[in-house]
Amino acid sequence: MGKRWNFSLGYFALALLVLLLIQSQLPAKSVAEIPYSVFKQAIVAGTVKDVAIGASRVEGQIQSVYLAQQLPEFKAAVEKSASEWSSFSAMRVDDSELIKWLDDRKVSYRGVADSAFFKMLVSWVIPMLVMVFVWQWIFNRMGSGQGGGMMAIGKSKAKIYVDKDIKIAFKDVAGIDEAVAELQEIVDFLTAPDRYTKLGGRLPKGVLLVGPPGTGKTLLARAVAGEAKVPFFSLSGSEFVEMFVGVGAARVRDLFEQAQKNSPCIIFIDELDALGRARGMTMNSNEEREQTLNQLLTEMDGFDPNRGVVLMAATNRPEILDPALLRAGRFDRQVVVDRPDVAGREAILRIHARRVVLAEDVDLALLAARTPGFVGADLANIINEGALLAARADQTAVTMANFEEAIERVMGGLQKKSSLMTAAEKHRVAYHESGHALIAMLVDGADPVHKISIIPRGIAALGYTLQVPAEDRHIYSKAELLDRIAVLFGGRAAEEIAFGDSSTGAADDLQKATQLVRRLITEFGMSNVLGPIAFSTERAAFLGQWQEASRAYSESTAQSIDGEVMKMAADIYKSVSELLKTNQAILHELAALLEQRETVEGETARALLARHRSAIGRPLPPSTGFKAALPRY
Image (cartoon, rainbow, N blue to C red; front, side):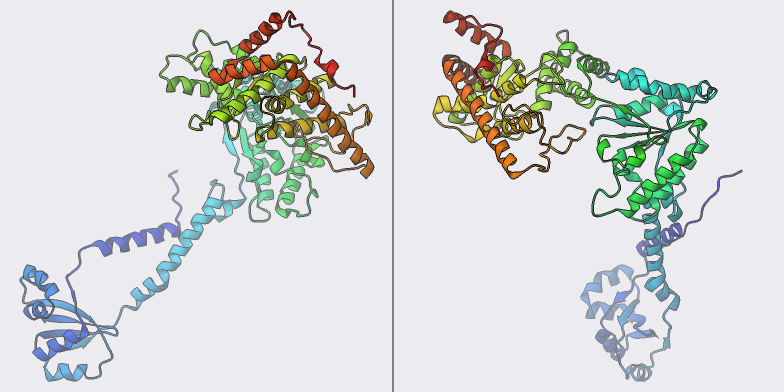
């Protein structure tokens, strides 16, 4: 059977426009456009013949010599044609004596009718065809492309990846071994469903991947399809919602119909929170989104998972999803795709470094230890940034220094080499960062100092003190939190000791320290004055962003909390100032060294501290006892 050709009115309109354009560009017979007054004078002079009178124009033949004499602009054309007569055309005016003049001079004339068809074509047929063509193009764009036209607007936008298109497998996924183990059961079911159905078991209808951005949720879903070698329907939650009510629900129905026809298969909906936000959360309801969500809930109830259709979705906002989506029988299994630990980060780095030429000094295990809290996308960006830096320097391999610079770029931003500080600013920033670093080295609970720099980075950072934890941490003691607050206060206290006043450079440190003190009192219940009570009434979001909860306590309690926050912050700041005054010699030498070199490694700073302690006969002990100087809260 031959290929079917679909006739489209838009193609006809386009072809007609092209023909008219070609006709307009073809060389036509030369016709001189003359004023009506010249035409009347030519009649009197007897140089006109064969006049055709229309409703709006007068055309005929005029002697070439006379035309060249009256209108010099036509002289060149007349000489080129070398003809006795030339064609002319003039716009007709209301002249009742025209016929009498022609009769008196015995000039032959005739009447001609304007082309009604051409006028109709130009006036409304062609514009109508153009409008139809434009509207059809708009509806084709709004449709899914599966059949096109206006009726395709309700088609699903899901992209079907067959098994040969997916080259990703579980070997390409690292750092999330627990999630991979959970999803291995899905692969087993898709490849050997009888193993589960013969005992009467039922696989979960929906699997929800929950995790921060960049942890590899979409990659993991595609790896499941790659391992099972089944079709993979992939789309985003926002693609269901359109400007027309009912379109989203129609697309959900069409998606599940396609999935049933291609079973066994996997349906993957990315960013599910765009579609499945809990109903009634806001005053402004979205009827189209709610209808789409209702249709999704209905379809999840209606399809049989034993036929081999598995619905997977991903979100980083599970707390805002509608409870009906998360009940048993729908998305009844949630797989957390969390940030990788140090071993997971090393495995991820090895995967992304396979195509990069590495120098001998590159230690991926050390890079993994220096990137706590980084997700897979961040680690991939570090490998890529390191390779770009090496290529920019015309190196033959990517070195450890390239990766170190890439980590600092990701954490602090690009170096602002063109942003030059004044000598006074550089002097103050050196003391500020030295204060942070010195307090971090003097207390027990702070992370080790890796690098101190006064090279501006990012938007507003004139310097930074990079601290790298020795191990991944999930919980912190009260003493460790107090030490972290002390490190934040170290820069402001060092400025006051060195210059006798403070500057705006400590604004960000003060915000972070104040927030941490308030959380320590109101959220963690670590105040001995207020007791082990959590005054926050709202849980933090999944991603961990802390926002101050709505107040659910009395005004007197609020005053007590504010008073305790100010007292704890003031006591810690006072202890930090006293500790820096005790170690002023180290502070001055470290600041001078930092101002000279602009960057000081953590080993150099610790060696400087140890040398000063040895010089005064007081070796640096494992614990400096700084927390003993803090008030007992």
